[in-house]
Length: 450
Image (cartoon, rainbow, N blue to C red; front, side):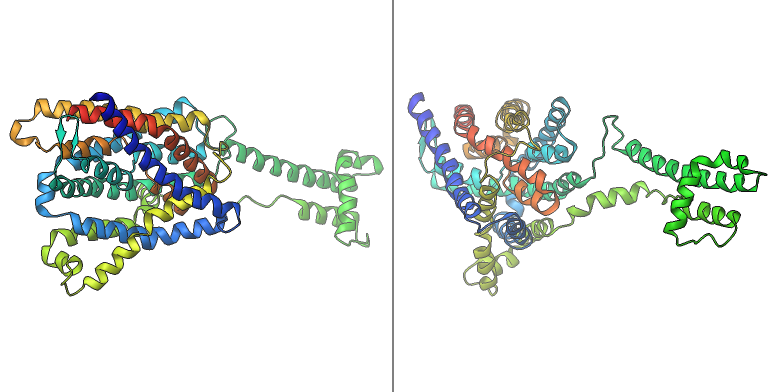
């Protein structure tokens, strides 16, 4: 039985990944034919980030979240927070070990921390549950409905954290980099340039002043001390339009004044720690966070939820329109991903080792941690506190072992740089190449455990 089950799960995983590649190929074709250039892709990302994705988050959470579901699945929000924290920890270790460029450090951590919590889990879990029996586990039609509630509960926490912490990580790729290897972020390099400029100005004015002093001395020999500045003074006199009609003293002093370096500007007062923290978190105040919170609020208030999402509700037309727009979010993100990969992986910002490293974090390290966490919870918690549903634990485990969220591509387009976007696309490219084998192995282990 083990071999057929493994082959069955392998085929399910392959179908999920194949769907992604089919949709991404549309973006690749569009880029190759000039229909989707970099600027157009960025514009589409912004539209997705403020319209289609908020609609998806609002409708999904609004329809699936309820007070009962949140009470019954309290472990899933904790699992989401744990997965994000461990992914970020491993991402930090990775960027230090591989000396990831400054412009990709924040995005690499985000790619390690946030997994695909909706599109791929829904495809995988639905395909598994609909088989009815997988090994010794039997799934029922009720399990499929419950799976959406569990996915929604996990996604609630992950989405809010993703759109709160993720944008500042992506925005860090815009920080100017003048690093000359001494780790000060370029401060010393800039000071050297400033000091060099001041030195040149001082030399010119000093030479001109020396000429003036020499003119005051008795005889021609007195001007020897300013010889180095006389040539500059004569050239400057011509450039300034002086015809020599005035005294040598006046001309030399005028040149010295004109060539003196301007006084350096007064340094701006350093922003307070609170101001810097608020500036770093400003990208977190975005439409997706608001849509997620609003969806949770609507889901918790049953009359409002029914008004929007029940066919006889007074605002059903509005809810249905939002649901239709939500359907464009995931395909559009994947099309943009395909456009980014049209020329193959971009190793300018993200090296092959870094991309594979992020993939190993998402597809190997985190699944292993989730297996350990699952076994520890079942052993430590009283039986009444441990959900008995097999589909609950299937969602728990699969959510912790998916590739990087496609929304990372959207976030980096909205808040990061084009170089960082190429790095995120490269991470996704390698992970989807690794997924058929590694994701299949993980799911086979998960089904064995539950």
